[in-house]
Image (cartoon, rainbow, N blue to C red; front, top):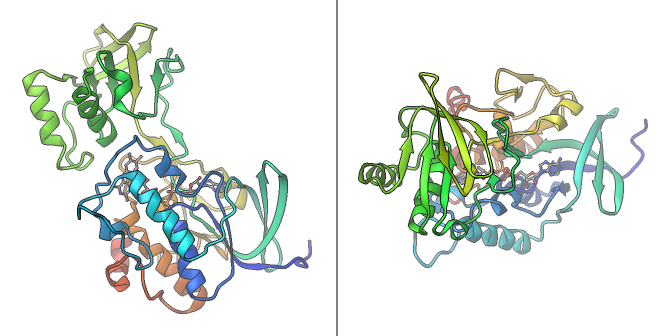
Length: 355
Ligand SMILES: Cc1cc2nc3c(=O)[nH]c(=O)nc-3n(C[C@H](O)[C@H](O)[C@H](O)COP(=O)(O)OP(=O)(O)OC[C@H]3O[C@@H](n4cnc5c(N)ncnc54)[C@H](O)[C@@H]3O)c2cc1C
């Protein structure tokens, strides 16, 4: 195939915080981009439970040096951050093809061809380089038990009001489950929390909410079932197993399965990127974020792969991905990333894998 169509310098796939920061930094460097998101910008944040606060403080999630104003100088909610992202896109006039999914990528002689799908149909584009900033939360981590697909069961906690004066059974022991248990109990739900481990890992739960949960468990206002695994969900009950193999039932009006999310690595596979380890993380050069396919980079939480025992990539430690990619493409580290001096994000290389 020939490279005869007009070719953009960089195609960015994904308009989450890191894809947007990369687009902004490349625009400032005068590099032309094509940018796609399969949904609206910031899609991952748009399905967070309503009124969920970041654990990250604002200066760590600000992008390209643009401060995030707040009336209260505290952490912001997902909704507030989406408003901030919209403001960035407007202020910098970033062109993003939303509701257009990248379905496939083919390496040509000196560029890539991207095939996209939107309501208007299939389209083809060319770019010299491609960056995958597609995130790592594409689908819930299913338990694969009978009843998981019943209408009163969900993997997505939206808001607590629905559970007022109802028996709510929550499965999980990380941040999402703990936060949902507390919020729903405070909204008048009768909450039971089942976790497969004996104790909560303080590294997986926001430090300012774990003591609150432990206090409620001690008081008996939230029922905690440690070392239990759900085997089946019926319209009125959850059947559980203890570590000794014994079984028991718990009645439930609603069930929240907050057992984490998986990344979809299909696009990486289609592009020929090598995935390694149990997490099926893409192979990349940590100096440049370039994968084993020359000209194809990874940025943001997508670098963590499909499945993780614990999340290790967050917005705050992914700004540096933008810096490395921009430097590799333009020869220059971007002037601003976040709002703290961007060089502070340039971690010593030996720390990169740990982060
Ligand atoms: C409840 C909750 C609380 C959280 N709290 C924090 C926090 O406090 N701090 C923090 O840093 N992180 C937090 N996170 C995680 C946070 O959402 C991620 O760190 C952040 O969204 C990662 O940004 P990203 O740009 O790498 O990827 P994402 O934001 O996931 O963006 C990826 C984008 O790529 C798009 N996309 C995917 N596939 C394609 C395709 N084939 N074609 C086109 N577009 C595609 C998606 O639609 C999406 O918009 C939290 C997550 C949850 C669920």
